[in-house]
Length: 318
Image (cartoon, rainbow, N blue to C red; front, side, top):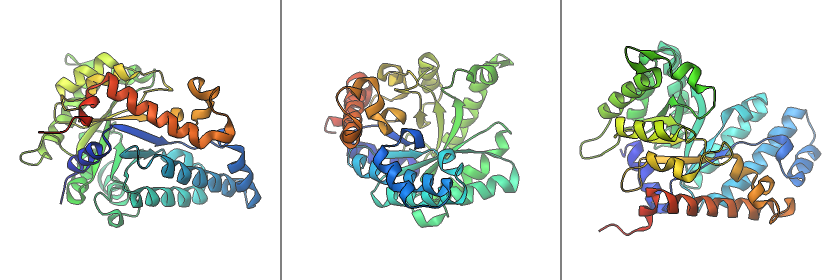
């Protein structure tokens, strides 16, 4: 069975980009045509919003599926709508897998013992979308309860060809409050990074460079991003913070290896609601929201290719 990093890098090479599109539907930002159609279906507000989220997300997938390798549904936006939202999320994830996209479920799960085992069993489908109730290739994981909370996720990931991304240095401004304090000469995020690096090494197949245990490291901390890549050479990175949060392509450059691999760069709002953004607002109105999404995706691909080692992906391998 191909491991997660092999599958991920194969998909990145095929599409020639590390671009990752987050799926973050928000009712007040959806195109009016989608809100109108969702509301016309009746039902509770949650049912209407879930209908709109699903419609929009499925259209988004159709627009980007030939341009990127990976998508990252933000579970919270669907979960807030209860059962209708969860049903919509499942259909969106299933459709993404049908289109050949890798799916990273951004659920930030993490707990001890049998609870962690249950989260892992439920979310980590890996290579076979039918291996779990939620058809995710990978899952974001919160390590706050301790190193033992990670092992159940690692075990299931190895069995199913799945991956996990452990929160190491997150992109939000307040991250420093919990992640920067020092213990025995090391920042807390460095201690987490070292544990993640050990787990990645344990899960790296012979002859490969990366394991199935990855790290979330924000583009908004470019110096730490570079340092963590040097500290964690065999760890796949998931890099949020590009675009709407202020991170630039140059800020993400340190996440990659020399071949342009080892990282995926996330953009959510900047792609989902491209016609609202300053760079595209004057060029595309709401009636052209689909074209705006396609153009924003194209620009992201081009930006990363020009300013990061990801440009190497378009060079034929010897």
